[in-house]
Length: 86
Image 1: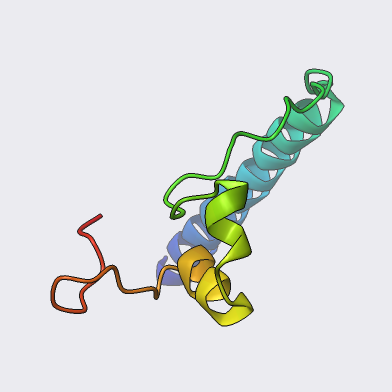
Image 2: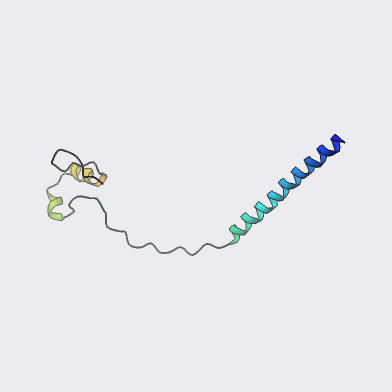
């Protein structure tokens, strides 16, 4: 009797796995068939935030290294050599 019981349990497990695979495939197939919304045209780029003074007069007297430091956030702004809190 133990052999029949083991076979029944094995059959139930195999059947459950098969059904899970069928249901999962149906769900993935349904989501793949659903068209996604059309891509929107990207808006114009927002102005850069967090950069130092970008005025042309200010930029003219600034070295390329200083501008790079301002753009990547490593520039110091006087008063003790620390960058402003963000």
